Image 1 (cartoon, rainbow, N blue to C red):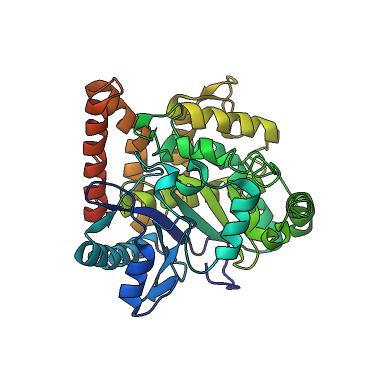
Image 2: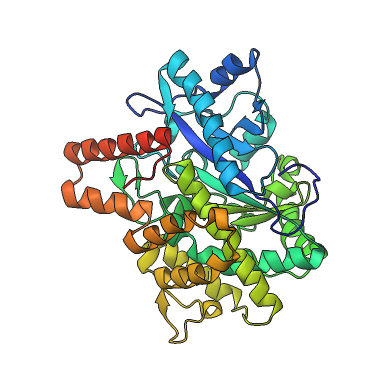
Amino acid sequence: MSTGASYRLFEVVGIELEYPVVDRDLVPRCLVEPAFRRINGRPTSDVELDNIGFSNELAAHVFEIKTVTPQRSLVRAERQLVRGLQRFTATLERDFGARLLPTGMHPFMRPEMTALWPRSGQRIYRTYDRVFGIRGHGWLNVQASHVNLPFGTEEETMRLHTAIALLLPYLPALCASSPIYEGRLGRHVDNRLAFYRTNQRRIPLITGAVIPEYVESYTEYRTRILKPIYRALNNVDGGDILQHEWVNSRGAIMRFMRRAIEIRVIDMQECVHADIAVAVFVRAALKWIVRSLYDRAMGCPEHRLLVRDFDSVVSRGRSASVRAPQFGAASGRTTARAVLERVLEHAEPFTPTAERPYLELVSERLRRGNLSERIAARVRARAPRPGARQRDHIRGIYEELATCLARNEPWR
C-alpha cells in the first residue's frame, strides 16, 4: 500500500507476491540483485516499472513483486502483475538462464543453498540472524502472497481486524501449497505455516499464536501486542533495531505507516490468476464478516478456539475437524472445507461483478483440493516411496507448475 495514503474500508487492495529464482534444474540461484542491476542500469534493491515494484526478500534468491499503488480492481491488478513478471522473467531467461518457481516452499532447497540479501536492510537481517538463527526453512524457504487491505475509521479498522482473525484459521484449507521440502512429503498440508509458527520461538511474543488477538482500539493494539514485543527485544543484543511495527509476525499485522492490515497466512499459488482469485475471495469474505459483526449476526468465539482450529487446518487442510461457531457449525464440529464453502456462498454477493469469475476457481479448489493436497496426492499415487523415482516425479510436477506461472494458467 502507498505509505500514508487514505482510502475507505475495502476500497483498494495491495498485493505482494514472492518467488524463488531457480535455474533450469530448479536449483535456487541468488540472481535477484544482478537481475535488478541489469534492469535498472545500476545496483539497487528496488525497481519500479509503471505501477509495479520489484524488491528483495531476506534470502538473496527470493524475488518480490507488488502493486506500488493499491488497486480498486483486482482484474487490473492481475494484468499489471503479469506484465511485471513477464518483464522480470525475460531478463532472467535471456541473461542468466533462470526462471521463477511458484508455491509456498521450494521442494528441494536446503537452507545452506542460499545467502542473505547483500544490499539494503543488511543491518536488520544480520540482527534477525543473531537473535533467531535464520538459516532454516522458516526464514529462507517460505514464499507467501500478502494481501493488504486499507484502514477505514478506527472503529471500522478494528472491526476489520476482528473479521480477519475470524477468517484466518481456515484459509490454509484453500491456500496451502507447500506439501514438500528437502525432496520429501512433509508432515503437514501447509508446511510453510508449520515452520512459520515456530521460527521466532526464542521470543514467542513476536509470532504469538499466529491468529491475531481481538483488540478494540489502536491504543490497545499498541499496548497489548507491540509494546510487549518491544520490551522482550530490549533483553537481546541489538533488539532495538527490530523495534518497529513490522517485527510483529502474526498472520495479519497492522501497518500504521501504510494505513493497511497485511494478511500473511496465504501460500503462493501456481500462477498470478490463482493468487488473485484468493485475494478476491478474501476481500469479499471479509466484507460479509464485517457486515455481520456490525449487524450482530455473528459472534466471536474464544481466541484459543480459533488457534486450535488454525493448528488443525495447517496439519489437515480441507478435511481438518474444526469448531468454527462464528460460521454456524451448529453440531459443534465440521470440516474446514464446509466452513469455507459456507463463507464462499455468503461472499459472492459482496464480490464486484467483474471479479466473480475468480470465485469459480476458489470453488474448484474447495471441491477438488488445494494445491498442496493435489500435489501430494499425485506423488503418493505415482511414486509413493521416497527415493530417486519419487524425486524425479516431484521434479516433473514442479516443472509443470513453473510452466503454469509462465503462462498464468492454473494447474489442472
